[in-house]
Length: 346
Image (tube, rainbow, N blue to C red):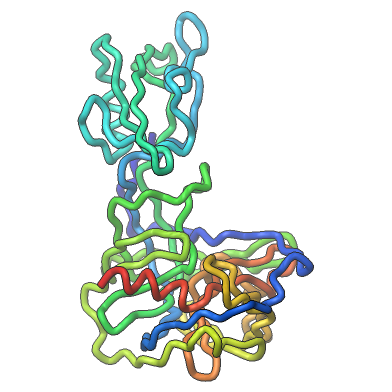
């Protein structure tokens, strides 16, 4: 139950989902109708940024037996606690950190402890009796929990209201693969200090350090990315039009991304397929065609998720996933499926 407290000058790797892709299984891009993106303008970014995020409640990421004088037992599992549950309170006291959970069990006074859990959209109440561990000499219930996460990613765009959008996909817990329940979080400036190239079967990754300079506050962690507000919007940002969904087409485009200390650069890609009726994070299939980027990274690497895609001078979407068996290809989300969340912050 380790509570992460130090964030600055820690080498971190972003959460970018790596997926195995079969071209035969992809949508063919032919849809019965098209969806319109409301008229809007955004400042596309492509800059690397740091993520510092705390959960709302404490996430159960594991169940492990406790060694007692009578053998191994797991009070939490016996009470019905499951991996992926979020502990909201203990004996009616709200909890938001791993240490609060640990203290509640270690200070056991012989009575059953009441846990209020969230499981999906359900609220569940259970009672659990801690047992004394012969290993640590303290009382435990057999839980591993997490209260925070950190990493780096890519800012997709800023809107005219001072909001930002990033990643194109949500932050999932690495152990449970469930969406991290956001309590609060910060977006920080970051620097890329190195990378591991992608190759067939192995997704590469960017490495960076978080800086103390706060960019803004993270307000939403959802399927289609991270969204938040900027503390001090840059008055010099250049805005471009957001393409209507029916304007997005198979063909040449560019991504803006940061893969080294030189900052944001544009690279050529090709949009191979478009599912204009999709509502998820895999609306487009794209291929890196720029030899400079392929030489540098091997294709798409972890940390590039959120890199904005521009076609015909308009913002059309953002990179979200890499195909581990074909790292020059990946999925992308359409602009319409990101803008709806940015608009919800207004």
